Image (cartoon, rainbow, N blue to C red):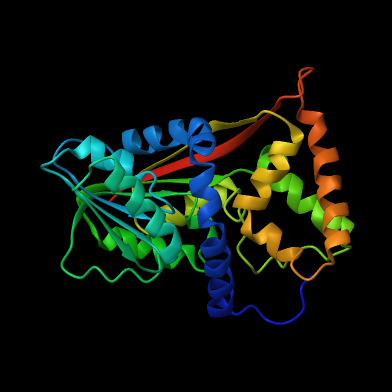
Length: 286
């Protein structure tokens, strides 16, 4: 276990820096990421009932999903407000939206747990892989519900258990093993903090959402080689890179070789890497 009590503010500061540093990597690998993740965005829009003319809130949008998908769906008569606490990620999101000619989307630097949107009401709220990183997800769910119109829907995606999400868990497990690091504190949010479906469903019900539903959806990551997978993780996985920050160049190279070796079990005979990962889509109505 990590020593010391959990400080949510310190945790968010570190996480924000990690995402700021990874923003360029997410932009670089965006086509690869979206090839596997597009289905999740589309399903979230369906679960939230997003339609033409709607006003939609996207929380922890990263570099713009599912906000951009929502902006296309609601059309010129609709509006999307997308928030994230990483300015660098939002800068990348703005570049993407501008490149697509979308002018019905507004990006704001904002903590997803502290939504300052007084006077706003939304037909739908979306959150793709952000909710599990909130130190107080129950509070966030309550805040989001307060921003929805009566009958408005929330649809969010979180990750299943580590064994079902090798794309993320493999490098973290290898790095911790090679550096002989203790397990992460159970107090600190991780990508798998809401993998317990019963707990996740209970949180939505306790926050006052009706018609709560949950379903799994596969996210496939495909890359040309194990070497490409290592490059991908170096660029997009800020928390993993942070663990190695104080290591010597020689030690870093050794650990990355170990990650590459562990990745080989996902190689095809041609050397191409394919990882199937399970996400959970949860939705509810105000």
